[in-house]
Image 1: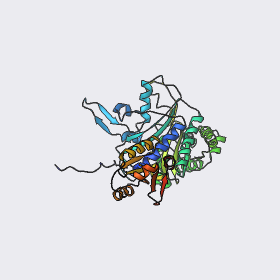
Image 2: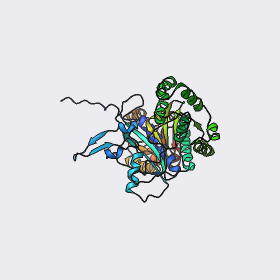
Image 3: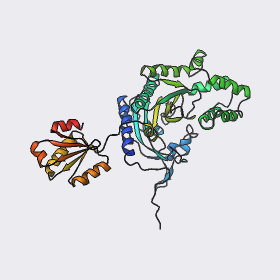
Length: 404
């Protein structure tokens, strides 16, 4: 039987230098999550299929695209398609978790969906959620967190915000009965354009209603605040607080997101006004569904693949230095231990000089230390910068400082 040696469609390998950049971006995101007081948790890849299906989320495309499987006992299982639905199980099994609960999780999720540019069946999701806080403070901190991450990664993107209650109130104000169906059409704006969306809405509204609806959707947030539209003040409260953190948000009244999922403010982070690279919102009816309680929750989510593609971040060299032993193996090992203790990534070799330098160049190792008899006697180390070719004779202290 011929074996096909290839990756499965929708899945991919990450090798250097891309793997190093992914790791650097992931570390940046995780560092900022911790700075904002979020605590890491881990959950299984596999859950009971029944726990993934619910009336509240059945319309969500991600749910219908989940991978399904069975174990040897014939149980219906599935691969997690996101992290948020697992919080409902966690709070059912751990009722004594102190609220508010700030958690973050970074890991792989799976969706059996059509693949395309930037769309994979396995991807890494970076989530941060605040459970048990219904205030604008937590929401504003989440948006400020996004702002700080994007700033460090040098990604120019706008944070767009809307509110599910506000959009509902806008549609009701023009007396359109099929609110959710109209929302679904508005959600297609980026994919099919305004003309096609208007054409589709004609199934649920007449020409005057559509004209009035679009005129309303062009109004600034202040209009909806002044006219007491439900949800408008919730957006404004978050916008004002986020601004104090230096994060500006953009009111986008056509923004929809998960109809059977989100209950209040929703947001998307758009690069150059087009591609969504992060998203989230308030989902007060998900976490407590197994405990018959409504537990307020707000969350954000980055897709590591899209963020990594756009990030302008210095990728750390691994290893940072190669120690070339010139018949000084014992001293080489001593130096390697000292460097690693100082958190300097290094490898050792006793190859011939030409072969060792060729390997360092091919592997993008930026520094080489030559360690021979003369260096040991003088207690100095020759450090070569592989990019510039510059060589320096340094003491051990100077060497450690140069490689920090």
